Image (cartoon, rainbow, N blue to C red; front, side, top):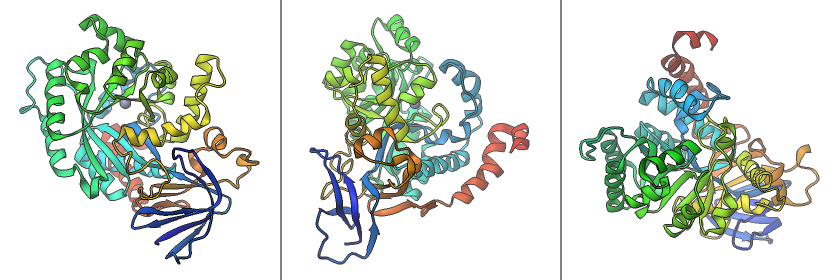
Length: 440
Ligand SMILES: [Zn+2]
């Protein structure tokens, strides 16, 4: 046994949603090898004293754009179209691979700090995203967002699609599938049926999953109905996008029929409550999607629209949004929101046999939270605290596959000082020019 967590409160997130007090969890060769109320007889190489601590599965962030960290706080309190067209797109035009690498490392440091062990990312310069993921030790499903506004799309000639092909060849399955590559269509409103069909056919042929933005805003949803006479979900389905397992980010405006369709097609909805509230996109009907049979996971969206990658904030926001929108305090209870951030996230990533629970044989993707702090006392109900009191700052250790990547303020795989220096020396001057440089 490599590592033993002793005398710790264990939140398993397994089928019985057990909370075990003063328990022991062992890790051997990156896997969970021991779980009991009794101490093991075997002597571990290292013991982590878990007194006053809670051990739970690492959180899974199923929709984000890691390289957008330089844009955090750059444009707030505007609508999505203004945010994108007037602020985000012009700055993104200045990005290069070097910026993306540093920006992604900063975001991964933030993820690890807040207890996230796996992410589903959609962006471009994905080779640099993959390099940062590879170095850091976090798990990621990485996708290259395809957008296309012409009318003669050819997968073989399109540079974005060729980037996807190269990415798949180089990174899909890296480090025993710690990195997986997915296909991505940015959205219905940023591409056409040629793109949907050709990208989907490639994904199907190569056994890749799909990541799309779907019905995020009312104007996007209504626009599709005007253009096609069909909702975004219906039109993408007609053009084979859901022929492979897919993640549909947002699903704020999906209709009852869409939910039935998406459930039948095995599509996961990724709920991003903070981003949807901040951009005033609306309140996704999570309870109705679950009732329709859909898997619903959680995401932060980018730290430019949120403005943090703290998934504990999304857990709380998801519960509050469901209760407030339905006028029912029983809507989306603590356990349900915690499942969305763990078990349902693993299912969304195709990693359900690998992580999302504390269970023998699964990867040791684990986080430890300090429950001895004033804001967590007393503790009548651990699950309730995890949903309603905890935030990412309470995480004191983050482990992926048995390897500690973050503990007590220190990163073990990321040189944060070097990343900060790279931001000051290169990323901020490149993206914001001299005027911002002065502001530091
Ligand atoms: Zn997004």
